[in-house]
Image 1: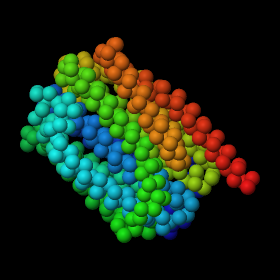
Image 2: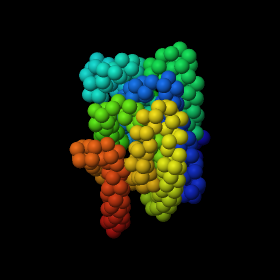
Image 3: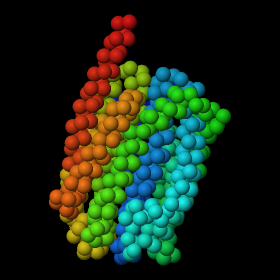
Image 4: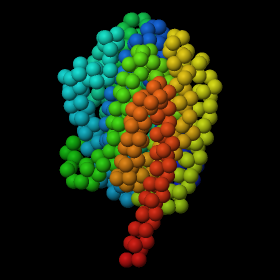
Length: 453
């Protein structure tokens, strides 16, 4: 396929057609990733040991943060490469991709070594108690060994979407996820490795996905490259990529911090509250990752139309995405609330966990219908190069949530902790719509000035 042909998907498809072509594979990928995350909780729950579920929930903020670091290279690289493709700067795309490949690997090695050296201090920060210490240590140790693999898969799965060909990365995620799901019952239940078994299954799955992604890079070497000789310190190839990826990383960093706070507040009352929160947060994650997958899927199109200055198609893809994510978020939130007891019990059949989780569902799901609007606002600002505003919006979500979380815990206890996240989401949706309107107005003004000159 020649380089011009790789851009035809953007030029010749309708807004709805692009949404389907770009988002469906991305949504499938994110859903499969979520399924194997759910599989970990499900099979660990079959041990009927709530403390092992608690251990996985305690470690969740760490790997959320690491995922964000991977997206620093992946999301930033995807946006930059899509814009360069729209400008027909094909050789620059190769330089950007080489930086993203090696940046993710080297950063992964540094983080893996550093976190293993300070593992016990990290566990104390996460809130591991004497009852959960050994489970948490075992799970964390194995997972940290696989951090370079994790960052590479996160980065490449996003970067390789830049030219609109999203199916090949999706297949790698499917293969890795199916492997993870197949190994979970073997390692957790048959070998009796418990949470360590879940960690081994995840690391092996990431290794398989890595091999698949390396193969895609080789096949797509007419557009992308992993040649370290192409890496340059020039701002447009390195700094711009990192800045474009900063909003996602900042958001996940603060999200990880709020996750640690939530676990510490809940664990102060009962470790099983953390287990219940782990299950209910997975249900919320289904909504969040689904709408995020849609928004990430259309992000290359937003970048492309922005680079090509095709505002009519840009507005069309934004409208279709906004309606789609709102409808999906509403339907899923209603379903999870109505069937909350049965869904929670399917993961871990413990009466205390089910009782706690049932109380959490309404607080976590009430903002489901607007999750997609928030994700779309962030994606639009990132994809159109507004690093400052996108970072502000990504930061604001947790900057609002953390004070609400602390205040809610002080004033209302358990209920305040549970509802703080949804309240923060509603506030930031309003902020996001306002910031996007300001940015779009500024783009039009700048283009009018350029035309008049």
